Length: 335
Image (cartoon, rainbow, N blue to C red; front, side, top):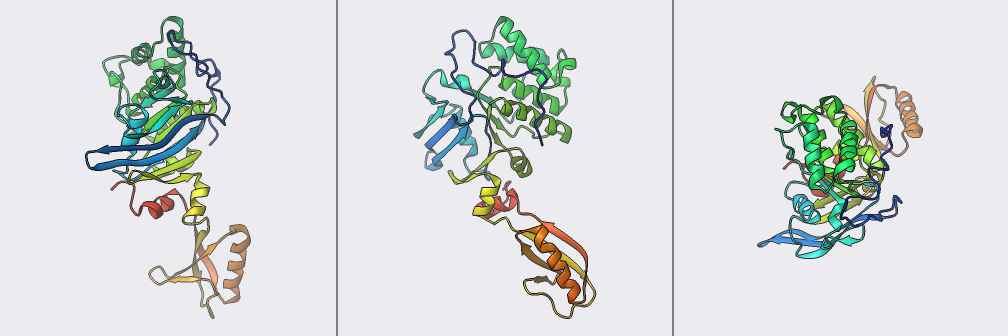
């Protein structure tokens, strides 16, 4: 799906920081800039090795889906990136600055899974509060709040208490609070939990807008369809290490393959089944794998007709991220 572009450009909002007392940002909009680098990160809690040397990079404007079974180390990794826990080994850098640099975290925005807004404040008051916490003042704060209300499509509800909002509306406010300081890298932990399909679509449209303007996004989610459709690259973590890193097509080729599986329901009596088919006794259907659906499917239909049968129905199964995930981890996402 193509991202919905704001009628008012985001460049002034997500350009160099002008907050008083901050180091000027030199983040280029070029896609070859490394926005986030995680290298050899290790973290243990007592005898439990939560992270065993995690390494990956996120480029400027790239959308990364960070996946893994429960207990794989995702939460610890997010805490390490956001500076909430101290690394045992390794390093994390934001636009070339190590997170030991006091200016590094000005480039980072974090949106937690649990709502981090004040429900006894209005949407506008929440945005103003988080903007001030990040150092915004005066005209800059007012402009950022106005932009955020337009971005989350809540201008008409700006002065209502967020306690009265739906789950999806609260999520949108929560995300906006996390980007009030114009971060170059945004970490989101399950941003669509408990929201309806319309709100989910709006949230991803919002994130697409940020990505188009150069914000790098790292998203954790239990919805594999979201990860496959709304990310540029996928990083899978298990047992504290990165076990896969690539585009969905690259991961398919490296694991289950990109061949489609076609299932045929045949009417009539076949003189003999064509070679290359597998018979499913429970479903009374034939199946085969194909590389090129357009070229190979007509040939299979002709073969059935030559043997005295007619294709009554067929199903095409395309390998996806779910198959990749199960192949790599051997278990469902929610264990």
